[in-house]
Length: 191
Image (spheres, rainbow, N blue to C red):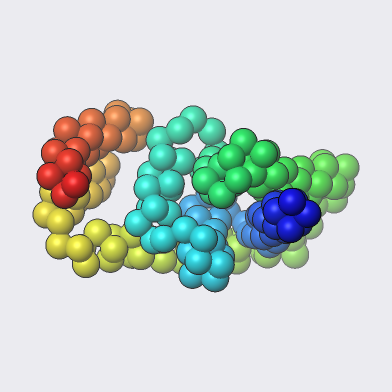
C-alpha cells in the first residue's frame, strides 16, 4: 500500500516539475510547448507513444483555450486522471502567472527599454523556428505512415488557409468531421 502511495506521489511530482520547467523556460505559446512536451513525455519518459501524443495535440487544438494548457491537462489526465490534470495545470500556469505579475509591476520600465525590446524581437525568430519544427515533425509522422487521406486533408487545410480568408475554426471543424467520417471505418476494420 505504501509503495503504491509513493509511486503516485512520485508521478504527481514528476508531472508537476516537468510541466513547471517546460512552462517556465518556454516563450511563444502552445506551439512551442508542444514539441517540448513530446520530447519529455514521449521521448524522455516514454509514458505516451508518438501517435497518442499527436491525438492529444489534435484534441488540445480543437478544445477552447490555450493550446499549452490544454495539452498539459490532457497529458496529466492521461497519466493520473483528474488529479493529474490539476497537477499539470498548476505546473503549466504557475510560471506565466508569476512572470506576468512581475512584468505588470514594472511594465513602464520594460515597455520603454530598448534591450528588452531587442530580446523580445530575437525570441520571435526562435519561436518561429520551433513552430516550424512542430509542423515538420507532425507532417513527417503523417507522411511516413503513407496514409493518403490525412495527407490530403493536411494539404487542403493549408491551401485553404493560405488562399482564402476563411476562419480557422471553420477549417478545424471541417477537418475534424472529415477525419471522423473517413478514418473511423479504417480503425474499426483494423480491430
